[in-house]
Length: 193
Image 1 (tube, rainbow, N blue to C red):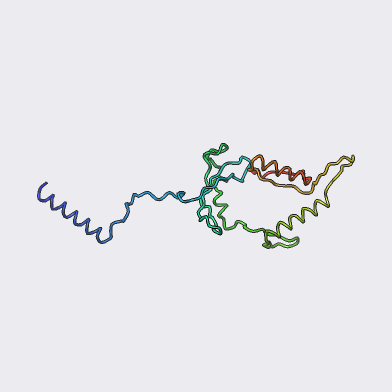
Image 2: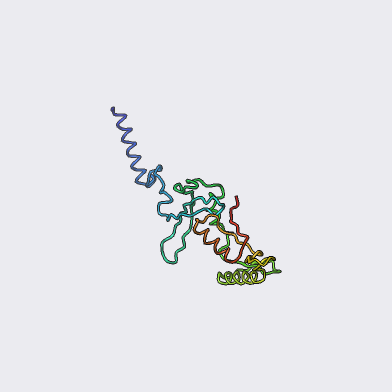
């Protein structure tokens, strides 16, 4: 190393230390990796609700485990360990996080009275009572106990039931038993594909 190279090296070192002393150098390297966004999230397994395929989902939420703390779902992806979809999701399933966090999503029951064009918010207890009362009144009015031949049929033809298509066999069995015990004939699932 000659004298000129020595002075260049010293000048570069002095300049670099002066810049860092003035706070112009970043504290962390620019190429430092970001923290993994799912690192502190709670993982919950579920099934997609859109069709009868029943794809497995992994839902990630933030929020403490406190008693009154609300969890906010921020990421949904396919479950790679699920035997049905093995991690893949259709466009509807991939867009579930937008549905869950939509500002237009209803969080409370609403009712539109006959002859009115406005929806009014009611409590959950009012909604359950109203549904039970309307079902009971309709069943009492339209229940068919015997057909024209006198054979006992126990049918309720004026009402139907829409069930979940993504429930396991046990849930489907119980739902079917409940609907049939009421006399319902029109039972369908939400398989919309």
